[in-house]
Length: 460
Image (cartoon, rainbow, N blue to C red; front, top):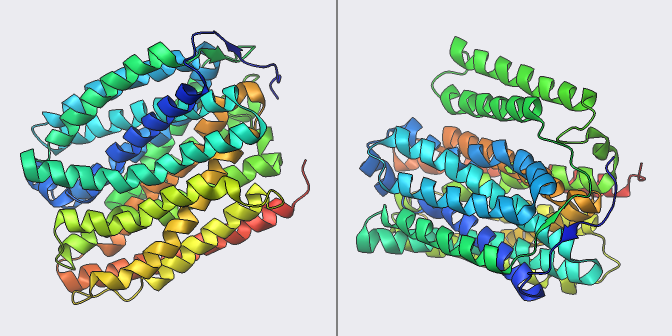
């Protein structure tokens, strides 16, 4: 276990408002960019001449970059300075966004999105780490609630902004806008954020980072290509490679004197809660919601902009619920509220079952409302647990571990939903979406129940 010495910080901070606002803005941009293809997938895939498998990679590739990089950049930030890694992340996001804007085909675009994911990892892990190192007690609960709210707001605004910009200037215009916003965000960070780092450096765990990122990549590739035949030798080989690499990651972390992820933390209920909740949120909530706008566009006949607006019912309520979570009675623990949030998400997904090509979009609204409130509650609790469940000088590592689980789940969720829901006609697409939605609801309900069980487990 690391020491709990307070992080070193310089005195160039632009006040507590900036310490919340800049990381929150970074998370907003990262999530807007993450969700931008949701409502314009058809236009993007047509412009890149991408087939069905290519569409799954267009949606999944940024999650791969996020999942592979979050834990590593969180550890780097703790050791070498959170503001420094944050600024590097904005530069990388600007460059990769420009690469996506000029991509001549799907391969270059997917590579750009993977790099965008890694750059977004730097913003997400270090931003929450900066907040965790800068605030304590009630002020930290407020700050992490604001940060968690940006997840919902980004998911709401990303498809809307992309749809509007696609209508006005083509789908590539979003990526130019993201590049410009990244440059401005980097300048603001260098001017206003305090520098902070751990009292003792642990060094970069290269074997751990390599085995984790390659293992996640192999697992995602197996699920993506498995839709062409789950028993194909190549698919089975990828699953086997993923199992070996992820097992190797666990062995490396257990034996390493200064691991990237201290596996002893899993004996602590709050940390285990943050990982379980984040994984389930990615798999069972982000996965299905990432696909829902495309389903409304293709199966229900809504325009990309209208699909984005309907989806915003869910994501905007997620934003509002996360902001207001700090007003809930303090006797309700983060574990209780996380479990409640996941159970509400499951209930909302069940309420949306029964999609068909003739369905009216209005029938989705009650489910989107319930699921949105649940998602916001879960996001706020996950942000709080991410920084409170680790030693104070490892706040970015805690954020990185939490969000690694979230985006591993999201990458797998998008791939699984895409494999189940994809169909050659509207009826097949709607039926597949119903199946995927039911499975997502079951996973979310199981995750909510597990959160309540882990919450009651005595601390180790």
